[in-house]
Image (cartoon, rainbow, N blue to C red; front, side, top):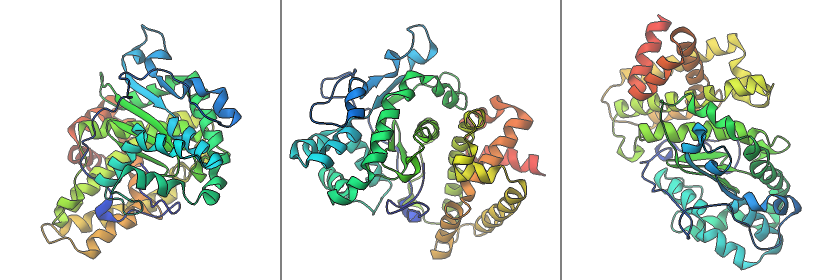
Length: 366
């Protein structure tokens, strides 16, 4: 999950507004179990071509006897499709459909629980309007979203076994019970178990639609992690010790998600398409980043039960922005544990939680 403001890449949600409780219920369609459906209205050619797969269950994409058939996961692109239709036509019916969509409710739940002040949180409709207005400005992102929609409903579903990359880094027998949505205008990708979403209009996907697949791996791994370990409520943070535990949580959360997509990126020569993976290939840079990370980490730990203050909150900003320390150092930590102890040991540490993850790494580090 990219912790950034909606206004642009690289900015960061205020520390107290990062994560909340993970309490979303499984969202199904109005008719019950979601199956493949079409979309009414005048859509772009790419949308029409893949319209029959705008909502599809993973179980319908694989053989009945395949392990993935047991996963209760749906791919839902209706929000992106209806957003494009609204932007091109201005017809209220599309805005009404967006307001009633499960993806919009997912975004509102995320905004409320993560206290995201960059969007309205009073109603689904207010949030949706904020993402799509002014129309003339949002239309500039339409081509990117159209390309994302074609990829999300096409190649991503043609070969869904990339989900094995996610499951390899989750406990054996883990099962999803939610949806992966394609949306428009909200962050880059966000997770709020049991669901996750990708912003098809994000500049990160402009000209690089396959990045959707890698970020799907990232966000769905978050869903697994959050299902096992619900994230801390930042509204409950009172002391530097509370904040220190949140840093531990976010480092393991983000680091393992970055690692989960590494093998496929490497095999598909896509490491250079994302700044985190570029940094991870630079050993000298990562040594400096790791030293900086643990300087911040140790300093926060030493503050113990002192009340959290502006200086303490600034640690989170420095760890998420710039060198994105908890993403990159977290992935470096997870990668070393996997290399020296094996993947089963790393996954076992996911089940045990952040304190065990850090304890093992500190012993390896010496």
